[in-house]
Length: 454
Ligand SMILES: *Cc1c(COP(=O)(O)O)cnc(C)c1O
Image (cartoon, rainbow, N blue to C red):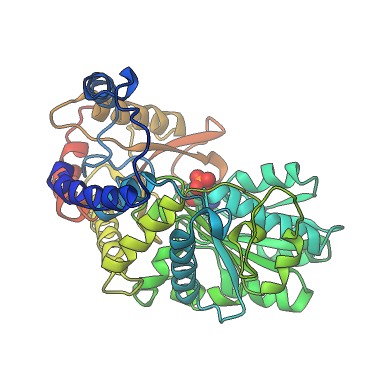
């Protein structure tokens, strides 16, 4: 999976084949003599680039369990590279007829995964931020006088985008387990136009109680938007998740965001947004003399805020889903492994003397910490930082984790033996989003546990 040069010959053949198609239109004037197009010039730049790229962290390796990062499926980068030589633009059908068709195809598959019927509206975006912006834009158009609400654990994009949209934002408080305060929602229900429910928080992957919130939405008449940017593809294996009940009602949400560039094995530049009711398309209506909507079919640019978008992204996702369809045995098998990695890691933490689990993972993200001798939260933070740095500084048998800030007041509700001598406590966090993590957990935990903190 990680040996990319192995796949290069496939790309060479495919590019060659497309070159033949290109020549069908006749010769293009000979520009190959230009210095910037000569192999030797490009080679030199690529050599420099290669050296520069080596300054990355090893995102491909299971010793990297830090942030939500991993290389795409080989089919995705091959398909992206191939389509990019044409560079179609999925803004309009005429900008790339085949890749627009592929986008409609993958949108249908994703909508099917959510459980939406034929009446949905959806498209790919350049990422989760724009996808959520579209959802909140529609939210504001439908309830211009009301607020957008999201929990304290929601992605910061929601409060920021509410600001951008000049709409009120209500932060819903959470308890020490990270659950949104349902009583607070009831008390503020008349002010809320749309409530954001996060299906896999960016911090530690909490799946918020969608089923209960949908009941409140019915009672009080507010809309529900599911931000499943991180967690969306876990729907494929939700039968095996403790949060099954929440996933079972995903299709009842008014809108859903899922990021294929997080758990869909895609290169960056691939988010998606879905609305349950296609009638919201009217809020995107625009009329411009310079776009090129030559047919009466749906143009993706008519239902999105963004204009130009890479057709190559649609090609990459389409190719990936040909190999790993949206089924438990297809792409779901990848998520099952990441989930098992997180559970096994959590078991290792619980077994290891002197270590504590902060959360039982809802998905594939685990929070934990090493117990200091003195029961002060500041000492936990110091140890977390020390271990985090030690892993990164060890080149041969190191590891890459991330740090996670928690409210100390919440922390001591879970761990009352500690004193909150600071407002925040820094914990360790591991994101196990690669299949390869499953086989590496024992080794990774050994490396982490063997850091000397004396
Ligand atoms: C990643 C993420 C976002 C932001 O999406 P980008 O693709 O990074 O723009 C929003 N919400 C959640 C829950 C996320 O995990």
